[in-house]
Image (tube, rainbow, N blue to C red):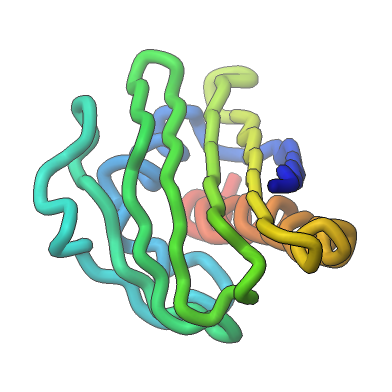
Amino acid sequence: MTIVTKTSTTSVNASASDVWEELDSHFLDISKWAGGVTSSVPNPATPTGHSGSAHGGRICDVDGIGTTDERITNFDADTRTLTYSIRAEGLPFFVEGLQNTWTVRADGPDRSVIDVEIVGTTKGIVGKLAAFPFGRMLAKGADGLPADLKSYLEQQNPT
């Protein structure tokens, strides 16, 4: 097993509570702002919230990887931290699992910082050999997802 971790930090011209609301309360609406996510609906396998979250998971259609099964695995409203696992039919066979963690921090009354950590686990010799290119793919997600959210939120509330 090989673990590949990619992180990013993005500053947003929106309050931490507004960013957190989008990630928590509007968890199912990721297709409104995430590039490549064409639809998102509640995950029927996780019908109730996890540890106080409004939702347990979602099913998304994502360009290039197909349908995803996403399940919230950690939720802490006090620290504004949300973690979810991702399974997808279109991921390479050597990918054992994916996990995204989002943390939102205030950086003033109308600014915030989003930290994203994507952890991928690969299996077998192919997973070891493919760890570097797989990490490059994860880095695109670690940078792209919060950038998409930033763009969406700043368009909603221009300063």
